[in-house]
Length: 103
Image (tube, rainbow, N blue to C red):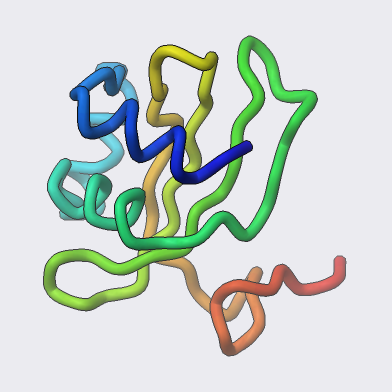
């Protein structure tokens, strides 16, 4: 997945937000602007090319308040589909919050 193409699609506001993801974001006090900031300024740290219905990726970035955030999104070449957004922790990630711990 190409982060620059994803950013172009986001600039065109071709972002799909499900009711489910909106509810989870509200529970976690994550704003849409935080997710967009992460996408526009972050980096892809994992690729999930075999995800269904679209390939997806995990993006590491920051909220507008400079808090580390992860965003998982799918991309079909025309639209970005927000799958989830969360604040990572060291339970599943190393101290850099980018590297997944071995199981």
